[in-house]
Image 1 (cartoon, rainbow, N blue to C red):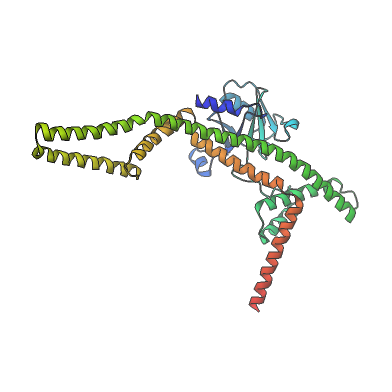
Image 2 (image 1 turned 135 degrees about the vertical axis):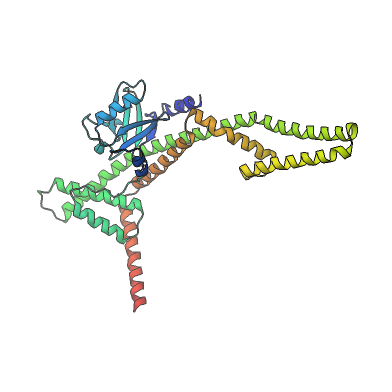
Length: 362
């Protein structure tokens, strides 16, 4: 019931997608243990792992999804661009090309699922292969100055677009005015693209934060339910204490007397101490009513959550995706002028340090 409630929430009409999923990879150790000869990727779909080959084609991905997910008749794989301008990949498209960025799965022509790819690897310098010299020079340049990762990403992206634009018109004779015109054109294109991407990312973050809140609410509701049920544990402790009091009073003043009841009460006290010490050994917490109740709730909480879906993995994935998207949001929120200002500041700081070091050596 809880799982159905969560997925109903994830399908609210305010979003044009059903859910945001995270693409995951096996570690080298896991691949070795599983004896995987090629890269295998997977994502969780309704708490079920869906596997596919990372070096195959879109057709193989489509076939894998149809085989592993019930009631799926058609699968479309789209490039993650503006929502109104999604481009479908051909069935023969290599997955290596598709996995270069985030993608969208469209199931049965109606359900859209966004697959985030580089959650564990935030955007890095990714210059096109046509410019290996520039790529190497930029890498060396970044090693010489201390600037944030997003600054490197924005500058790298700007240079990539600029070089691509120059390549389109390589037959022209370049002068200062033409170069400035091309730079302005690239900045304008990047600005428009960044605004569109920021809107998409804002929607995705809003969706994931709502899902995060929903997961927290589900856990809180289960905790409240368990606390009500586990009140019986406290009642049993109260009953045990009252029975001890009644037994010792009855045995002392009615049946046997204190000579007989003294060792009995001593053993009851030792028993209570053993129970308290055992509780402390298991939980490292004091033997109090509140801690006993909390321990009983925690004992059943994970089991209850696991009956619905893997709560901890689900929440962890959501948190990682939010962190990844917020990094992308920062990247698209930065303009080239801000980046240049940061780099100039880093250069000045480095020059000041070098100058101070030279003066110290002298």
